[in-house]
Length: 631
Image 1 (cartoon, one colour):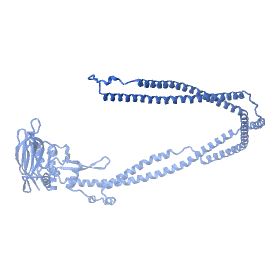
Image 2 (tube, one colour; image 1 turned 45 degrees about the vertical axis):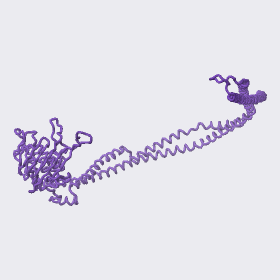
Image 3 (cartoon, helix red, strand yellow; image 1 turned 180 degrees about the horizontal axis):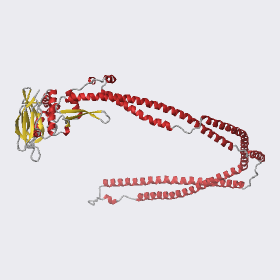
Image 4 (cartoon, one colour; image 1 turned 30 degrees about the horizontal axis):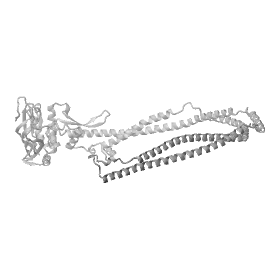
């Protein structure tokens, strides 16, 4: 399939107010100075198809701007293009316009956003229908690769590598001749998969190998040097054991004597406790009656003090009640006098005269006033009488309390006389002398003296020196046995060293086997790389691709570096990059079966371009062309 751009029409798109451009089927050249709109044409073409500019930016300003870089309102931005696909013509169009809304009650319209209208062959359609129509012709990713000479090189190297294998084909491991034995080793796995497995095994083997020498060194350092022969050490142990046995016999003989001494010491302690109990019982009997009377005297004195304190308290209470009696008696007399004063009162005859006119009130009114006066007088007297009765009750209660307290005072006075009499009696008893004759403990004292003399006779016997000698011999024997155990430790360490050395040798052999397989895989990989690069590079004339990078350790690392006649793509000049890009587009177009218009920016720097089946649109900087010129 071949996609041709016949006509591109722009209205109010970026800096172009209105322009209709006709394109040649093979090559069209667009001349213009900087800022005249060459790139705008490429942007309009890209926006028409995929809503992006030629730099893959989705958010870019497509509306015309004022000199202050502000959008010009009330203008519709429109791009329309006529295409030919395999001889069939179709038209695509997009209209981008502002939305203005006039709210109720407002005189002016308000800007509320934008809307885009899509057209296929002049018929409006939905965005989804439009995108589906475009993608059926050519998807965005393929379009980018087939229309921009620098698009392929701008990809990540991993994506470039994937594309090359997709376009030029990969090579299976079993297609490499001379490596049948390796294929048996791989057992159906790919070389890369098996190499990863080998790397993990190799890493584990190296780690195990690195761990063994420190362990051998640790065992070597644990070996004890300068040890005496086992026969000599055993002879020393036997000699020390014999001397220890002799000392234990001596200690056994002295232990019997010490046991006898301890028995007598226990007897002495028992007799001294018996003596203390006898003396304690005698003293208790002698002072029992005295202590009893002394305790009774203390009790009587406390009772005397308590009764005296109670008497003083009663006196204070009686004095307070007497004062209350005087006050209450006075209150009763006051109520009585006030009652008598009310009793002597009479009706005021002046109240029988009208205060307004001065005439005598009717007899009925006068009788009412007198009745009311008598009633109020009776109420006042009744109130005084009630108050007097309450006060009399309080007075009677106060007098009764005074009588009770007086009775209690007289009772306490009688008790104090009795208590004081008892105190005098007990004090006379305590003044009598006490019989302090000590008890007789001479028999026990004699027994204690005899036992103490017998104990003192044994004090010259001392077995501490023997015990210390036995302890020293036990320490010496343990030290010799420790040296004997070091012989066993040395034997175990030597056996472990031999075992580790054998493990090290086995691991080193296994590592060598793994490395041999790695070398075989690397040779195989190099052969495969050469075939891959030769296969891919055969598709191109001046462009080649480096798919693997030789590392310092001799291994190969995947990469994808584009070369132009052996020069890295990034180091080549613009012309060489464009020429290489068109060569890549030719191969991709053949693979996808699709040719699309190629936009070449800065075409003035490229003298010649490779032959191509695709339509070419050159954007050429020309200082003399202040407006776009199409050829």
